[in-house]
Amino acid sequence: MDQSRKLLVPFLTAGYPTRRDCLDYLEACAEGGADQIELGIPFSDPLADGPVIQASSQRALDAGVTTEDAFRIAERFRDAPLLFMTYVNPVLQYGAARFFARAAMAGLKGVILPDVPPEESESVAAIAEKTAVPIVHLVSPTCTDERIRRIDRLTRTWIYLVSLKGVTGSAPNRDVGAFVRRVRRLARRPLLVGFGISSPADARRAAAEADGIIVGSALLRRIERGGTPRDVERFVASLRRAID
Image (tube, rainbow, N blue to C red; front, top):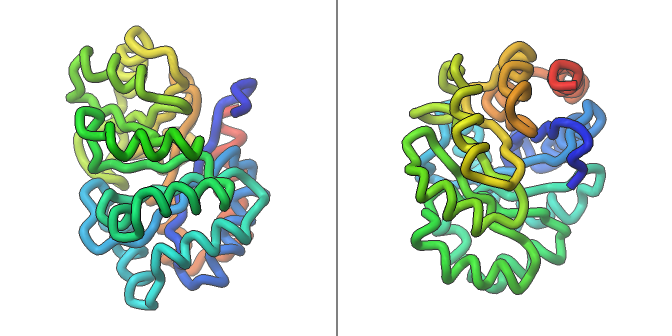
């Protein structure tokens, strides 16, 4: 992972708005300056996703998009490193060993599992370790110091900082810097901030303290409103300029 600049990680939903268009939007994110891209596997019962991501996931599910489709998209896209964002049920239904082996073959750089707390991640983490596709753990403002230290010990890549108490697409945390500084005192791994970042100004504020940012709902909202891949590329490029 290139740590010479702040990392920009856009989020897209696999198969949204269609399987073919999803690849075009992934390419647009890469052209706009994404360092990595988070690709969400559509799931019917998300815990952390706000209404915009939920709607994109439901549209993909209604179109029949599956975990297998997400893997096929990942295998076809090579313009930027990909991570999956999913939940533990799809992983277990696919078969955890098979899922992580396939993720390694597809070149995935990590898997984000919001509903797998570090205290219960041992069995899945052991499988992930064998394939060198690490689990990305989340730290929220309510995490204790002890839990943050534990997550840091378990982390092989970067830590996902949930900047607020809420779901994706919520209003930004204006005091995100204090949260990042608190985690920084306890963790050695790179810290990327997500949830509530919807504009270049939000991105600049978060990146002033963090090692990078994650942007999902604001990007998907543009697609939902008819934004073209070129529109998405411009938006991602505006975030790139803001954090640089």
